[in-house]
Image 1 (cartoon, helix red, strand yellow):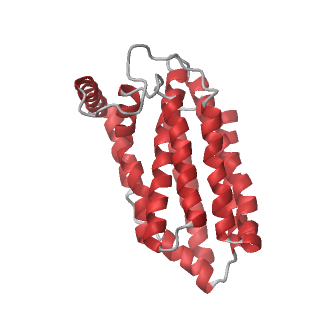
Image 2: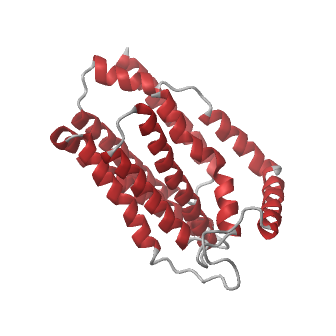
Image 3: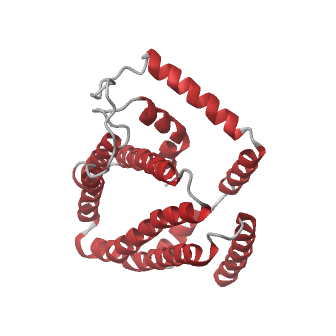
Length: 272
């Protein structure tokens, strides 16, 4: 479990690299649309392999790595599109765009959680992997509808050498700009806070085995638990978009920390 979890997390550790590639190397004349299409196809391939040929833990880890890479890359591209549309807008408008993204994610989580557990019980994991392989194709199909101005006079195919001087120059400029931005206290301090927050050890794997091996939770029941989590996420997005998007961030962080601590202690007491 640790190997699979670690493999799935690896592509998310180098997300700035995906941004450099997307900004510097337009594929088929597009910096966003083409990468979204390819990411969807890559994700569909990884889950198709899981549904058909993969029968070992190392094969599963490699396929999950591939699928995670496709999601991480498309996540960077989508974030860049949101940033481009939010640039120059007020905090309220920017918050609404982010709420739309996270709300869509939570809604998708509700749908998948509702069906995933029962489908595993009824048809098995291979069938669920096959259905999952169809979902990234939706990303590829929707990406074709993205409105983006075609880049004229640059590479139009996928075979762009990474050693190209223009790519290296652009990447160097992006790295310098990123470093100058990170050095600013209003960026550096929140980054350190998020790092320390995410670096806190967790017991997800142990909790999973406890709920399945000791408590006997079925896939359907775990799907219902995930459904409640997704509903809570959607409710949180609605709360922020309706009441908190104009509230200072420090007050939101304080309220979130207090609420999370209370809920965490409640969970500990219930388990004990």
